[in-house]
Image 1 (cartoon, rainbow, N blue to C red):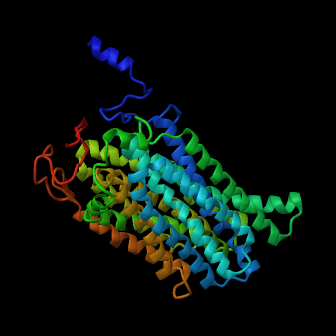
Image 2 (image 1 turned 180 degrees about the vertical axis):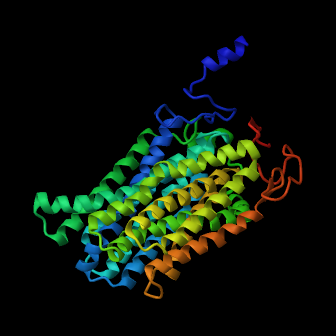
Length: 471
């Protein structure tokens, strides 16, 4: 007992860790290095990226009038913001596998911060669409965020860590809905700026904070519990797999494609809602710009607890029922979210719509947390690729939904919202096909021993006991 106690005392970490030095406890109120410091840097940096990307929608009624934007222009701009994120998220996964999440995240934030500042120079519908396209690239930091948490936290708490980190970061979208109209009005009332100047100056603020957090990530972050990713690569002599092998292993894993589709209609639906909900309440119920922004803010701000709740539920279901529990939890929660989305488009009263919107926000964001409660277990060899595929699925789902339902005037806005709910329900069904040889699926038992080695290095916490990763 004494040697074990001595070894524990000599641990350089303030949190208990597993054999890979990953934290087995998650304490979000601490800032201890390296685990909790990485957590706070990751969510704060991504928060600023979300704030930047969604700083434009709450001011759309003003920008629309100033630039003479048509509904088609606005729809195309919304699509453009997601298209940029698709390509960058696909690239961010392999980038994290090759250089680590810290450098990949900071480099992207520094590259995209000037773009949101350039929104102050927009003079035409075309330039407006291009700005939204460029700013959308910053959302790829989500992949680095989830990669970083998976590198720092043990399988027993990785769902919770991923959920809280992404959930708190996603609040940036809600904060933008709430804060940007206030900044706009303050610039008018305190500085006496003209309306067309005030909304332009407003966009300097999110770009500044995005750059500041990127510098903090570089200065204070650490890729792995043991040190930097560069040092880790040197220590092992060579990467486990070449880039092409990592990419191939990820792209040929069908579970990653199903999770990408699922994520496309939880997070993708959330992104679409962030894009249209302020304008929806402004136009349909006649509320003013500030009130519409406050209502829309409730969607993003619910991430404070809803997405972490999904991650915690995934971990709890995993401990109780294994992978089957994680999959059933994901399917159930996302299906309920789809039903609430259908209802949202059918409610005709202001307060009824607000109530349903709040419930929808909780369930759709919890589904996102549950999705990334499964992602870390799909492939240890190609974690970044799987995370990138799934993250891109979220933005692809948003693009498809925006193009089919929210571009042009084919459907009324309320009908489009209900149809989005039906799409969520249908696109969640393929979760039933996910099967792991060691742990089974929603309806089938495992086909081999949980400790046997296979083509992938799977890892999972089952029945409350921490299983060792297969070698």
